[in-house]
Image (cartoon, rainbow, N blue to C red; front, top):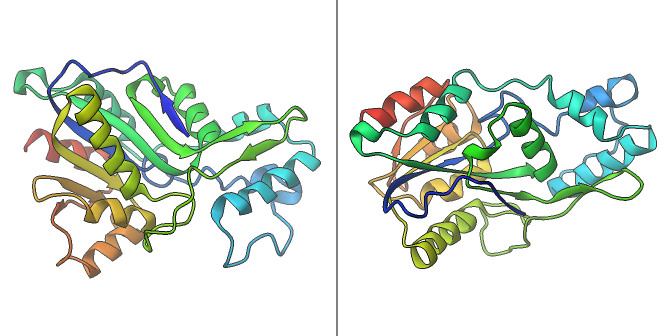
Length: 251
């Protein structure tokens, strides 16, 4: 699902693209970790198996919660307890303002294997939704009975680094091409910020002019260290949003 916001930099030809993962990158938890909504704070055994594709597992979770009386407002209250990684709100706001004194403008997008409902709800609760030009994630909406339903963003079998339902590298490449061909926006530099294994594919597609920011101590950081000879972009591990901002303003 592609979600558009009012943020529009189509008239700016010199802009840097900042790409965020969401769970464990922007927010300091996983939006799918909603055990607090389940009876006794846990799900029945057997919900998860290693062959599950993540949205399929989450559909089981949503159906179970629905049968136990959980509705939209309950999810929203749960999301209000989820905190951002320290410094990330300031980072988003600073990027949204840009650096006019240095001639820098920033365009922000999210590419996430979470879902459209949780991401937009959390961003709206924190007055950040209009900072992002697009959100690429698995579509999710409530059916007529009030059960949350999730779909794959797309289905792919070409990228072995990515799950079947979402190749972030493909999404990123398509977005850059669309902005160039349709809107005449040429990104001067790309900054990619993530934490998980599915962030490796887009990281490896970046050029030597770009930066990747793996969250320190998380899976992407480990994978990048193992594949350092394949990585062209400069890697800047981060623990908070200030680490990222300090690098952006100095380059």
